[in-house]
Structures are given as structure tokens and as C-alpha cells.
Image (tube, rainbow, N blue to C red):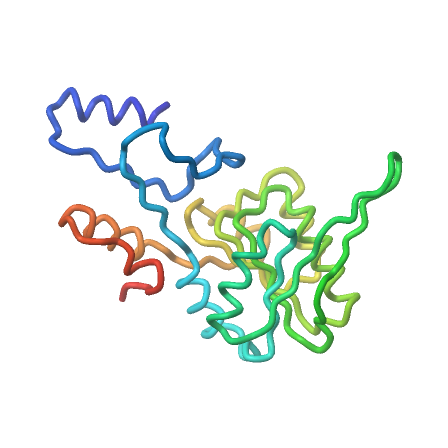
Length: 218
């Protein structure tokens, strides 16, 4: 609502063009990318180039890693990263049980003796990724990292991360993390401000932003 009020104020002030840059789109967790409902152009920015850069610079054993999705829905995301790193991928899915029975996590892929990197779009209470980390260690992974685009970290998230077997939980700074980092040394941040800045520059100058889908601006 605040964003709409600001956009309206710009229009009232006779702005010739208004561009909204939204690092994390709130209240849209279940929204899908739809076409046909409005004619405003939209460009999605991706954290993948920054994630690849972080992995290569901060995980010495990255060539022996395996990229893991904590659910079947993220398979496309992890296969893209795995292909660009030239490593294997795996996924975890919940095997639905009968009523009054606990769901069971099933790992598809071999993580034995490998550094496992869990990749997801966001983490809220962190129950899924923490259970996934335990599953990976019990399956033979030597270390587990989690890399997430948006770190919401509500409720018991910080306690769960501190008690989990992660080497690090890495998020972008689409949401401020300074306060959470004071209580959880495992949280590390990838700065994506240069990606947003370059997207603004390219949009303002009428240039394509597709370059940012595969490159991190210097």
C-alpha cells in the first residue's frame, strides 16, 4: 500500500515515468508469474550469478559439491546452478503418509562424501531446510550450506539455524539482516546492490537488463 501511495504521489507530481524496484515483493509468496492481467512491463532479476560467484569464492571444495533442492518444486533452480558449476544435483521431497503419520523426507541423489549446498528461493521459519540439512548429513554429506534469495527468518528460525548442522546460511540483502546476524553467526549475506543499481541504470537509459541474468556487474 505504501508503494502505491508513493507511485500515486509521483503521478500527481507529473512524473513522466515511474519505475518500481522491489528487491523482495511482500505478500506475494504464492503468486505465480501471470500474463494478461495488466500491461505494465515487468523484469524479474535473478540472484543466480551472485550465488555462483559466492560459491566459487567462499567454498574451497566447490568442485566436489552437489546442489540440492529441499523440495521438488525447486528442481529447475538447482539444475541451472549445477549445470553452470559442472557438478551434480539432488533433490528432497516429502513422502506423504496416511492420516496421523509424519511425512518422511526422501533424498533423490548421492551426497556421500560431498559438500551439499541447499538452494531455495526463501526461508521463513526454516523448518524445512533444517530438516533437509539433517537428512543430508545422515546420508553422508561432509558439510551442508544453505543459500537462499530471501531470508525472512521469522518465529523460531534463528534458534533452528543455530542448532542445525549448517556451515553457513547465506542470503541476499533483499531483506536487512544486520539484527539477525547479531544472534546467528552462521548467517552470511550476498550484497546484490550492484545488480539493482545496474538494473536501474539500464532501465533508465532504455537498455536491456537481460545481461544481468548471467553476469554480476562490477
